[in-house]
Length: 262
Length: 156
Ligand SMILES: Cc1cc2nc3c(=O)[nH]c(=O)nc-3n(C[C@H](O)[C@H](O)[C@H](O)COP(=O)(O)OP(=O)(O)OC[C@H]3O[C@@H](n4cnc5c(N)ncnc54)[C@H](O)[C@@H]3O)c2cc1C
Ligand code: FES
Ligand code: FES
Image 1 (cartoon, each protein chain N blue to C red):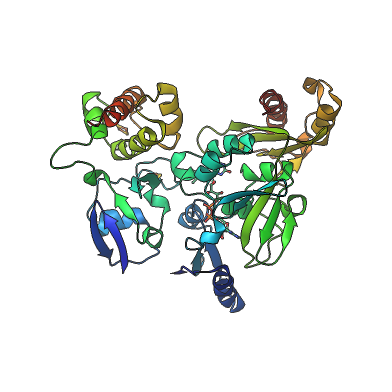
Image 2: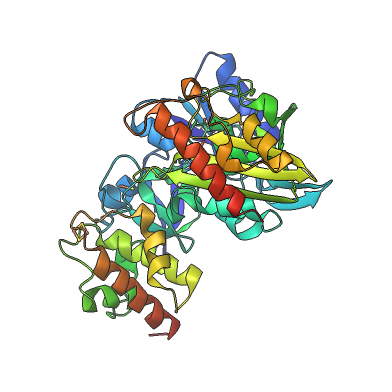
Protein backbone atom coordinates (compact mmCIF):
# COMPACT_ATOMS: atom_id res chain seq x y z
CA UNK A 1 0.00 0.00 0.00
CA UNK A 2 1.29 3.42 -1.00
CA UNK A 3 0.40 6.85 0.26
CA UNK A 4 0.83 10.24 -1.38
CA UNK A 5 0.07 13.69 0.01
CA UNK A 6 -0.68 16.03 -2.92
CA UNK A 7 -0.47 19.79 -2.49
CA UNK A 8 -3.49 20.76 -4.61
CA UNK A 9 -6.99 19.48 -5.35
CA UNK A 10 -6.04 19.03 -9.01
CA UNK A 11 -3.03 16.89 -8.05
CA UNK A 12 -5.16 14.83 -5.66
CA UNK A 13 -7.75 14.13 -8.35
CA UNK A 14 -5.12 13.19 -10.93
CA UNK A 15 -3.29 10.96 -8.44
CA UNK A 16 -6.56 9.11 -7.87
CA UNK A 17 -7.33 8.97 -11.58
CA UNK A 18 -3.91 7.53 -12.44
CA UNK A 19 -4.40 4.52 -10.16
CA UNK A 20 -8.09 4.03 -10.90
CA UNK A 21 -7.34 4.25 -14.64
CA UNK A 22 -5.07 1.23 -14.43
CA UNK A 23 -7.73 -0.72 -12.55
CA UNK A 24 -6.27 -0.19 -9.06
CA UNK A 25 -8.19 0.45 -5.84
CA UNK A 26 -7.55 3.99 -4.59
CA UNK A 27 -9.03 5.93 -1.68
CA UNK A 28 -8.88 9.49 -0.48
CA UNK A 29 -7.78 9.69 3.14
CA UNK A 30 -9.33 12.49 5.22
CA UNK A 31 -9.59 11.91 8.98
CA UNK A 32 -9.26 8.18 8.43
CA UNK A 33 -11.76 7.37 11.17
CA UNK A 34 -13.93 5.34 8.86
CA UNK A 35 -11.35 4.20 6.33
CA UNK A 36 -8.66 2.98 8.76
CA UNK A 37 -11.09 0.92 10.90
CA UNK A 38 -12.42 -0.55 7.63
CA UNK A 39 -8.87 -1.41 6.56
CA UNK A 40 -8.14 -2.96 9.96
CA UNK A 41 -11.26 -5.10 9.60
CA UNK A 42 -10.09 -6.11 6.10
CA UNK A 43 -13.20 -4.58 4.56
CA UNK A 44 -11.06 -2.24 2.48
CA UNK A 45 -7.62 -2.85 1.02
CA UNK A 46 -6.72 0.09 -1.23
CA UNK A 47 -3.35 -0.09 -2.96
CA UNK A 48 -3.09 3.69 -3.05
CA UNK A 49 -4.11 6.24 -0.44
CA UNK A 50 -4.33 9.91 -1.39
CA UNK A 51 -3.98 11.90 1.83
CA UNK A 52 -5.92 15.18 1.71
CA UNK A 53 -4.17 16.65 4.77
CA UNK A 54 -2.13 19.23 2.84
CA UNK A 55 -5.15 20.74 1.05
CA UNK A 56 -5.64 23.81 3.21
CA UNK A 57 -8.29 25.28 0.93
CA UNK A 58 -10.55 22.37 1.98
CA UNK A 59 -10.61 23.77 5.53
CA UNK A 60 -12.50 26.61 7.12
CA UNK A 61 -16.02 27.95 7.54
CA UNK A 62 -17.52 31.01 5.84
CA UNK A 63 -21.01 32.47 5.51
CA UNK A 64 -22.29 33.46 2.06
CA UNK A 65 -25.66 33.56 0.23
CA UNK A 66 -27.65 32.46 3.27
CA UNK A 67 -25.47 29.39 3.68
CA UNK A 68 -22.70 28.29 5.98
CA UNK A 69 -19.98 26.86 3.74
CA UNK A 70 -17.56 24.42 5.29
CA UNK A 71 -14.51 22.89 3.67
CA UNK A 72 -14.55 19.11 3.28
CA UNK A 73 -11.58 18.75 5.65
CA UNK A 74 -13.31 20.67 8.44
CA UNK A 75 -13.16 18.39 11.47
CA UNK A 76 -16.12 17.63 13.71
CA UNK A 77 -14.27 19.50 16.46
CA UNK A 78 -13.99 22.61 14.30
CA UNK A 79 -17.70 22.51 13.53
CA UNK A 80 -18.49 22.15 17.23
CA UNK A 81 -16.32 25.16 18.02
CA UNK A 82 -16.86 27.40 15.00
CA UNK A 83 -20.24 26.74 13.37
CA UNK A 84 -22.19 28.71 16.00
CA UNK A 85 -24.19 30.41 13.22
CA UNK A 86 -26.19 27.14 13.11
CA UNK A 87 -26.36 25.99 16.74
CA UNK A 88 -28.05 22.71 15.76
CA UNK A 89 -24.95 21.81 13.72
CA UNK A 90 -22.57 22.44 16.61
CA UNK A 91 -24.87 20.38 18.81
CA UNK A 92 -24.86 17.56 16.25
CA UNK A 93 -21.07 17.67 15.86
CA UNK A 94 -20.66 17.28 19.62
CA UNK A 95 -22.70 14.07 19.49
CA UNK A 96 -20.38 12.39 16.98
CA UNK A 97 -18.25 9.64 18.52
CA UNK A 98 -16.03 10.99 21.27
CA UNK A 99 -13.50 13.84 21.59
CA UNK A 100 -10.71 11.81 19.98
CA UNK A 101 -12.90 10.94 16.98
CA UNK A 102 -13.96 14.60 16.68
CA UNK A 103 -10.32 15.67 16.64
CA UNK A 104 -9.79 13.67 13.42
CA UNK A 105 -13.05 12.95 11.59
CA UNK A 106 -14.16 15.33 8.85
CA UNK A 107 -17.34 16.57 7.20
CA UNK A 108 -16.25 15.44 3.73
CA UNK A 109 -15.41 11.94 4.90
CA UNK A 110 -18.72 11.62 6.71
CA UNK A 111 -20.75 12.66 3.67
CA UNK A 112 -18.73 10.61 1.16
CA UNK A 113 -19.14 7.54 3.33
CA UNK A 114 -22.92 7.97 3.83
CA UNK A 115 -23.04 5.50 6.71
CA UNK A 116 -26.73 4.80 7.40
CA UNK A 117 -26.09 5.56 11.11
CA UNK A 118 -23.98 8.70 10.61
CA UNK A 119 -25.21 12.11 11.73
CA UNK A 120 -24.16 14.49 8.96
CA UNK A 121 -26.44 13.03 6.28
CA UNK A 122 -29.47 14.06 8.38
CA UNK A 123 -28.16 17.61 8.77
CA UNK A 124 -27.32 17.85 5.07
CA UNK A 125 -30.75 16.63 3.97
CA UNK A 126 -32.70 18.81 6.42
CA UNK A 127 -30.63 21.94 5.69
CA UNK A 128 -30.79 21.37 1.91
CA UNK A 129 -27.02 21.28 1.70
CA UNK A 130 -25.14 21.77 -1.53
CA UNK A 131 -22.16 19.45 -1.92
CA UNK A 132 -19.54 20.96 -4.21
CA UNK A 133 -16.92 18.69 -5.72
CA UNK A 134 -14.02 19.05 -8.12
CA UNK A 135 -16.47 18.54 -11.01
CA UNK A 136 -20.06 19.12 -9.91
CA UNK A 137 -22.48 20.58 -7.42
CA UNK A 138 -24.93 18.13 -5.84
CA UNK A 139 -28.12 18.89 -3.94
CA UNK A 140 -28.29 16.74 -0.80
CA UNK A 141 -31.66 15.39 -1.98
CA UNK A 142 -29.88 13.74 -4.96
CA UNK A 143 -26.56 13.04 -3.24
CA UNK A 144 -27.56 10.29 -0.80
CA UNK A 145 -28.48 7.23 -2.85
CA UNK A 146 -28.74 4.42 -0.33
CA UNK A 147 -26.53 2.82 2.31
CA UNK A 148 -22.86 3.77 1.80
CA UNK A 149 -23.83 4.98 -1.67
CA UNK A 150 -23.72 8.55 -3.01
CA UNK A 151 -23.81 10.48 -6.27
CA UNK A 152 -20.00 10.72 -6.19
CA UNK A 153 -18.26 9.23 -9.23
CA UNK A 154 -15.00 7.33 -8.87
CA UNK A 155 -12.31 9.80 -7.87
CA UNK A 156 -14.75 12.70 -7.37
CA UNK A 157 -13.50 14.88 -4.51
CA UNK A 158 -15.76 16.88 -2.18
CA UNK A 159 -14.40 20.42 -1.82
CA UNK A 160 -16.97 22.13 0.36
CA UNK A 161 -20.51 21.88 1.64
CA UNK A 162 -23.03 24.71 2.04
CA UNK A 163 -25.76 24.30 4.67
CA UNK A 164 -28.76 26.63 4.52
CA UNK A 165 -28.91 28.80 7.61
CA UNK A 166 -32.35 27.98 9.04
CA UNK A 167 -34.61 30.14 11.18
CA UNK A 168 -34.39 27.43 13.83
CA UNK A 169 -33.25 23.85 13.98
CA UNK A 170 -32.36 21.03 16.37
CA UNK A 171 -30.98 17.52 16.30
CA UNK A 172 -31.87 14.71 18.68
CA UNK A 173 -30.07 11.41 18.64
CA UNK A 174 -30.51 8.12 20.43
CA UNK A 175 -26.97 6.82 20.55
CA UNK A 176 -25.88 3.25 20.36
CA UNK A 177 -24.27 2.88 23.79
CA UNK A 178 -21.04 1.32 22.52
CA UNK A 179 -20.43 2.71 19.04
CA UNK A 180 -22.04 6.16 19.64
CA UNK A 181 -23.58 6.03 16.18
CA UNK A 182 -27.28 6.84 15.85
CA UNK A 183 -29.93 4.18 16.41
CA UNK A 184 -32.25 7.00 15.50
CA UNK A 185 -31.30 10.60 14.78
CA UNK A 186 -33.84 13.25 13.82
CA UNK A 187 -32.78 16.63 12.43
CA UNK A 188 -35.58 19.23 12.42
CA UNK A 189 -35.22 22.58 10.66
CA UNK A 190 -37.48 25.51 9.90
CA UNK A 191 -35.83 26.84 6.75
CA UNK A 192 -38.22 29.72 6.15
CA UNK A 193 -41.37 30.81 7.93
CA UNK A 194 -43.55 27.69 7.96
CA UNK A 195 -41.21 25.61 5.73
CA UNK A 196 -40.07 22.60 7.73
CA UNK A 197 -37.67 19.78 6.98
CA UNK A 198 -37.32 16.64 9.06
CA UNK A 199 -34.57 14.17 8.17
CA UNK A 200 -34.01 10.81 9.85
CA UNK A 201 -30.78 8.85 10.12
CA UNK A 202 -29.81 5.60 11.83
CA UNK A 203 -32.98 3.82 10.80
CA UNK A 204 -33.58 3.55 7.09
CA UNK A 205 -32.72 0.48 5.05
CA UNK A 206 -31.70 2.93 2.35
CA UNK A 207 -29.97 5.36 4.69
CA UNK A 208 -31.12 8.88 5.49
CA UNK A 209 -34.68 9.91 4.52
CA UNK A 210 -37.20 12.74 4.95
CA UNK A 211 -40.26 12.25 7.12
CA UNK A 212 -43.11 14.09 5.36
CA UNK A 213 -45.76 13.49 8.05
CA UNK A 214 -43.54 15.17 10.64
CA UNK A 215 -42.84 18.12 8.32
CA UNK A 216 -46.56 18.51 7.73
CA UNK A 217 -47.36 18.45 11.46
CA UNK A 218 -44.76 21.11 12.22
CA UNK A 219 -45.98 23.29 9.34
CA UNK A 220 -49.62 23.08 10.40
CA UNK A 221 -48.99 23.23 14.13
CA UNK A 222 -50.53 19.79 14.67
CA UNK A 223 -49.60 17.98 17.88
CA UNK A 224 -46.43 16.11 16.96
CA UNK A 225 -47.28 13.34 19.42
CA UNK A 226 -49.90 12.26 16.87
CA UNK A 227 -47.48 12.08 13.91
CA UNK A 228 -47.49 8.71 12.15
CA UNK A 229 -44.10 7.04 12.70
CA UNK A 230 -42.06 6.17 9.61
CA UNK A 231 -43.26 2.81 8.23
CA UNK A 232 -41.56 -0.09 10.01
CA UNK A 233 -41.12 -1.76 6.60
CA UNK A 234 -38.63 1.00 5.67
CA UNK A 235 -36.61 0.55 8.86
CA UNK A 236 -33.55 -1.53 9.29
CA UNK A 237 -33.69 -4.25 11.90
CA UNK A 238 -30.61 -5.75 13.52
CA UNK A 239 -29.26 -7.07 16.81
CA UNK A 240 -29.19 -3.53 18.17
CA UNK A 241 -32.81 -2.57 17.51
CA UNK A 242 -35.86 -3.98 15.75
CA UNK A 243 -37.65 -2.03 13.02
CA UNK A 244 -40.61 -1.34 15.32
CA UNK A 245 -38.33 -0.06 18.08
CA UNK A 246 -36.50 2.22 15.67
CA UNK A 247 -39.80 3.59 14.34
CA UNK A 248 -40.86 4.35 17.90
CA UNK A 249 -37.52 5.99 18.69
CA UNK A 250 -38.07 8.33 15.75
CA UNK A 251 -41.23 9.72 17.34
CA UNK A 252 -39.38 10.18 20.65
CA UNK A 253 -36.43 11.90 18.95
CA UNK A 254 -38.80 14.09 16.94
CA UNK A 255 -40.46 15.33 20.14
CA UNK A 256 -37.06 15.91 21.74
CA UNK A 257 -35.78 17.87 18.73
CA UNK A 258 -38.96 19.94 18.54
CA UNK A 259 -38.47 20.88 22.20
CA UNK A 260 -34.90 21.99 21.61
CA UNK A 261 -35.31 24.21 18.55
CA UNK A 262 -32.90 27.14 18.49
CA UNK B 1 11.72 8.43 6.57
CA UNK B 2 9.05 10.31 8.49
CA UNK B 3 10.07 13.34 10.54
CA UNK B 4 8.16 14.09 13.75
CA UNK B 5 8.73 15.31 17.27
CA UNK B 6 8.37 12.61 19.91
CA UNK B 7 8.07 13.75 23.51
CA UNK B 8 9.86 16.97 22.68
CA UNK B 9 12.72 15.44 20.66
CA UNK B 10 12.84 15.80 16.86
CA UNK B 11 13.29 12.37 15.24
CA UNK B 12 12.96 10.69 11.87
CA UNK B 13 11.20 7.36 11.82
CA UNK B 14 12.24 4.55 9.51
CA UNK B 15 9.03 2.56 9.15
CA UNK B 16 6.37 2.04 6.50
CA UNK B 17 4.35 5.28 6.20
CA UNK B 18 1.13 3.25 6.09
CA UNK B 19 1.88 1.52 9.41
CA UNK B 20 -0.42 2.41 12.31
CA UNK B 21 1.11 5.06 14.55
CA UNK B 22 0.49 2.94 17.64
CA UNK B 23 2.55 0.06 16.22
CA UNK B 24 5.38 2.42 15.31
CA UNK B 25 5.35 3.94 18.79
CA UNK B 26 5.38 0.56 20.50
CA UNK B 27 7.47 -1.62 18.21
CA UNK B 28 9.88 0.81 16.57
CA UNK B 29 10.21 3.54 19.17
CA UNK B 30 9.83 1.52 22.37
CA UNK B 31 7.04 3.66 23.78
CA UNK B 32 5.04 0.75 25.17
CA UNK B 33 3.09 2.98 27.55
CA UNK B 34 0.69 3.48 24.66
CA UNK B 35 -1.59 0.44 24.79
CA UNK B 36 -3.80 -1.39 22.30
CA UNK B 37 -7.12 -2.42 23.80
CA UNK B 38 -9.35 -3.00 20.79
CA UNK B 39 -9.41 -3.20 17.03
CA UNK B 40 -12.51 -1.06 16.57
CA UNK B 41 -11.19 2.40 17.55
CA UNK B 42 -13.42 2.47 20.62
CA UNK B 43 -11.35 1.98 23.79
CA UNK B 44 -8.92 4.90 23.89
CA UNK B 45 -6.05 2.89 25.43
CA UNK B 46 -3.91 4.10 22.53
CA UNK B 47 -4.54 7.83 23.04
CA UNK B 48 -1.58 10.13 22.49
CA UNK B 49 -1.37 13.90 22.13
CA UNK B 50 -0.90 15.04 18.56
CA UNK B 51 -0.04 18.73 18.42
CA UNK B 52 -1.54 18.95 21.89
CA UNK B 53 -4.84 17.23 21.09
CA UNK B 54 -5.78 13.69 22.18
CA UNK B 55 -6.13 11.27 19.27
CA UNK B 56 -6.37 7.50 18.89
CA UNK B 57 -2.96 6.37 17.64
CA UNK B 58 -4.47 3.07 16.46
CA UNK B 59 -6.51 5.00 13.91
CA UNK B 60 -3.75 7.18 12.51
CA UNK B 61 -1.15 6.19 9.95
CA UNK B 62 2.48 7.13 10.45
CA UNK B 63 2.26 9.31 7.31
CA UNK B 64 -0.50 11.34 8.96
CA UNK B 65 1.83 12.14 11.87
CA UNK B 66 4.47 13.58 9.56
CA UNK B 67 5.77 16.82 11.03
CA UNK B 68 3.52 16.51 14.09
CA UNK B 69 4.45 16.77 17.77
CA UNK B 70 3.48 13.47 19.40
CA UNK B 71 3.40 13.12 23.17
CA UNK B 72 3.00 9.70 24.77
CA UNK B 73 2.46 9.02 28.45
CA UNK B 74 6.25 8.65 28.80
CA UNK B 75 6.67 12.28 27.74
CA UNK B 76 4.38 13.88 30.31
CA UNK B 77 6.61 13.99 33.40
CA UNK B 78 9.17 16.74 33.51
CA UNK B 79 12.50 16.46 35.30
CA UNK B 80 11.34 13.45 37.33
CA UNK B 81 8.16 15.25 38.43
CA UNK B 82 4.86 13.70 37.39
CA UNK B 83 2.48 15.75 35.24
CA UNK B 84 -0.37 17.03 37.46
CA UNK B 85 -2.80 14.69 35.69
CA UNK B 86 -0.54 11.70 36.40
CA UNK B 87 -0.12 12.77 40.01
CA UNK B 88 -3.89 13.10 40.39
CA UNK B 89 -4.46 9.54 39.11
CA UNK B 90 -1.99 8.32 41.71
CA UNK B 91 -3.50 10.32 44.56
CA UNK B 92 -7.14 9.60 43.74
CA UNK B 93 -6.55 5.89 43.02
CA UNK B 94 -7.67 6.47 39.45
CA UNK B 95 -6.36 3.07 38.35
CA UNK B 96 -6.68 -0.58 39.17
CA UNK B 97 -4.84 -2.81 36.66
CA UNK B 98 -3.56 0.30 34.87
CA UNK B 99 -4.19 -0.90 31.34
CA UNK B 100 -6.50 1.95 30.38
CA UNK B 101 -4.58 4.53 32.41
CA UNK B 102 -2.24 6.07 29.81
CA UNK B 103 -5.20 6.68 27.51
CA UNK B 104 -7.29 8.05 30.39
CA UNK B 105 -4.52 10.45 31.42
CA UNK B 106 -4.11 11.72 27.86
CA UNK B 107 -7.90 12.11 27.49
CA UNK B 108 -7.96 13.86 30.88
CA UNK B 109 -5.40 16.41 29.71
CA UNK B 110 -7.55 17.12 26.66
CA UNK B 111 -10.62 17.55 28.87
CA UNK B 112 -8.76 19.93 31.19
CA UNK B 113 -7.53 21.97 28.25
CA UNK B 114 -10.94 22.31 26.66
CA UNK B 115 -13.05 22.78 29.78
CA UNK B 116 -10.67 24.42 32.25
CA UNK B 117 -9.84 23.95 35.91
CA UNK B 118 -13.44 23.92 37.16
CA UNK B 119 -14.73 21.15 34.89
CA UNK B 120 -17.60 19.22 36.55
CA UNK B 121 -18.09 15.48 36.88
CA UNK B 122 -20.92 15.24 34.36
CA UNK B 123 -18.81 16.91 31.69
CA UNK B 124 -15.87 14.65 32.48
CA UNK B 125 -18.03 11.53 32.28
CA UNK B 126 -19.50 12.66 28.96
CA UNK B 127 -16.06 13.44 27.54
CA UNK B 128 -14.74 9.99 28.53
CA UNK B 129 -17.06 8.30 26.05
CA UNK B 130 -14.10 7.22 23.96
CA UNK B 131 -12.28 5.54 26.85
CA UNK B 132 -13.11 2.13 28.27
CA UNK B 133 -11.88 0.79 31.62
CA UNK B 134 -12.31 -2.98 31.91
CA UNK B 135 -11.83 -2.70 35.67
CA UNK B 136 -14.75 -0.25 35.58
CA UNK B 137 -13.04 2.16 37.97
CA UNK B 138 -14.79 5.14 36.47
CA UNK B 139 -15.74 6.87 39.72
CA UNK B 140 -12.12 7.41 40.73
CA UNK B 141 -11.07 8.15 37.17
CA UNK B 142 -13.57 11.02 37.06
CA UNK B 143 -12.33 12.22 40.46
CA UNK B 144 -8.72 12.05 39.30
CA UNK B 145 -9.45 14.06 36.18
CA UNK B 146 -11.33 16.67 38.21
CA UNK B 147 -8.32 17.04 40.52
CA UNK B 148 -5.82 16.91 37.65
CA UNK B 149 -7.69 19.66 35.82
CA UNK B 150 -7.77 21.83 38.94
CA UNK B 151 -4.05 21.29 39.54
CA UNK B 152 -3.20 22.00 35.91
CA UNK B 153 -5.16 25.25 36.19
CA UNK B 154 -3.26 26.14 39.35
CA UNK B 155 0.00 25.54 37.49
CA UNK B 156 0.92 22.63 39.78
C1 LIG C 1 -15.24 5.13 17.51
C2 LIG C 1 -15.92 5.91 16.42
C3 LIG C 1 -17.16 6.46 16.66
C4 LIG C 1 -17.83 7.16 15.66
N1 LIG C 1 -19.05 7.68 15.93
C5 LIG C 1 -19.71 8.36 14.98
C6 LIG C 1 -20.99 8.92 15.23
O1 LIG C 1 -21.52 8.85 16.35
N2 LIG C 1 -21.62 9.57 14.22
C7 LIG C 1 -21.06 9.71 12.98
O2 LIG C 1 -21.67 10.32 12.12
N3 LIG C 1 -19.85 9.21 12.72
C8 LIG C 1 -19.16 8.54 13.68
N4 LIG C 1 -17.92 8.04 13.41
C9 LIG C 1 -17.35 8.23 12.08
C10 LIG C 1 -16.53 9.50 12.03
O3 LIG C 1 -17.36 10.63 12.11
C11 LIG C 1 -15.73 9.52 10.73
O4 LIG C 1 -14.69 10.35 10.99
C12 LIG C 1 -16.44 10.00 9.50
O5 LIG C 1 -17.57 9.25 9.19
C13 LIG C 1 -15.56 9.88 8.27
O6 LIG C 1 -14.73 10.98 8.22
P1 LIG C 1 -13.17 10.83 8.03
O7 LIG C 1 -12.66 12.20 7.80
O8 LIG C 1 -12.61 10.07 9.14
O9 LIG C 1 -13.09 10.02 6.65
P2 LIG C 1 -12.10 8.89 6.12
O10 LIG C 1 -12.17 7.69 6.98
O11 LIG C 1 -10.77 9.47 5.85
O12 LIG C 1 -12.81 8.58 4.73
C14 LIG C 1 -14.09 7.97 4.67
C15 LIG C 1 -14.47 7.75 3.20
O13 LIG C 1 -14.72 9.00 2.55
C16 LIG C 1 -13.83 9.21 1.47
N5 LIG C 1 -13.49 10.64 1.50
C17 LIG C 1 -12.93 11.31 2.54
N6 LIG C 1 -12.85 12.64 2.25
C18 LIG C 1 -13.37 12.78 1.00
C19 LIG C 1 -13.56 13.92 0.14
N7 LIG C 1 -13.23 15.17 0.52
N8 LIG C 1 -14.11 13.71 -1.08
C20 LIG C 1 -14.47 12.46 -1.47
N9 LIG C 1 -14.31 11.36 -0.71
C21 LIG C 1 -13.77 11.52 0.51
C22 LIG C 1 -12.68 8.27 1.72
O14 LIG C 1 -12.03 7.89 0.54
C23 LIG C 1 -13.35 7.09 2.39
O15 LIG C 1 -13.95 6.25 1.45
C24 LIG C 1 -17.22 7.33 14.39
C25 LIG C 1 -15.96 6.79 14.14
C26 LIG C 1 -15.30 6.08 15.14
C27 LIG C 1 -13.96 5.52 14.86
S1 FES D 1 -6.66 0.61 20.67
FE1 FES D 1 -7.11 2.54 19.86
S2 FES D 1 -9.13 2.86 20.45
FE2 FES D 1 -8.76 0.85 21.20
S1 FES E 1 -7.73 0.22 35.44
FE1 FES E 1 -7.91 -1.72 34.52
S2 FES E 1 -8.72 -1.24 32.58
FE2 FES E 1 -8.91 0.61 33.62
